[in-house]
Image: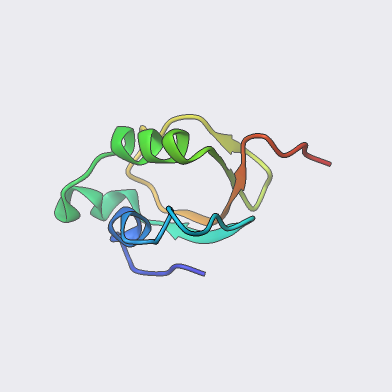
Length: 85
């Protein structure tokens, strides 16, 4: 579970992706603070695509872009190649 009040992408970038790939990542998203940490919604979506994840909120809405500064949470990142129930 990641809850770092806006530094989500910085934490994810620091993960050792070359040696492991989590099956699920549970994360709150704070887009209103992303600019303070040096990234945008487009950067976040690019990261998810690069690592092969999809983002869903607790209402099972999938995020294919981040255009709002509103809080999103909780969310779960699941591998793109995994079938959904």
